[in-house]
Amino acid sequence: MKDTLLISHVTMINPEGKPFEGDLFIQDGEIAQIGRNLNIEAAHYIEGTDQDWFLLPGYIDMHIHGSAGHDTMDATQQSLHAMARSLVQEGVTSFLATTMTQSVSKIESALLNIAEFQCHEGEANVLGIHVEGPFVSKIRAGAQPVAYMISLR
Image (cartoon, rainbow, N blue to C red):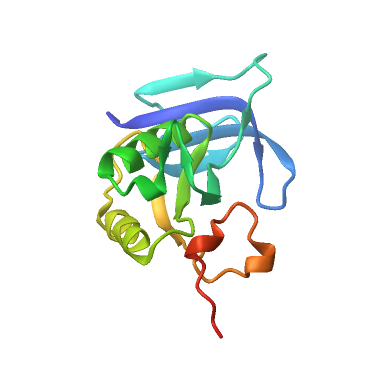
């Protein structure tokens, strides 16, 4: 019972996207049971009656270059951890660290850094890498620096 949490009388969103009012029981960091009026003893308890709370799954950010003043292209563990800590504060539980069109050596450094990343408690998890460039059309460069774009022709 030491690592258990019961959240009662909150609105959750079911897999079909519809609201469901009920309780959520978490054991050892994982959802163990969802239902109405669960009669389970837990080490921690949150009562949602009259709070108008919604309980939603964590968000996955599939394209993020940086946050909290840090960027994937910084290619440091410190930057990735700062990003991961700040993202969790916004409800993001996982993300794809996104590179930017730069020199091949800078992109490689960022990729190697991401590959070594180990999520700590209280941080969003890196699910993978979104490689943005350098194979981008120069006529649709957007914010990507044209000087580092590589043509496929």
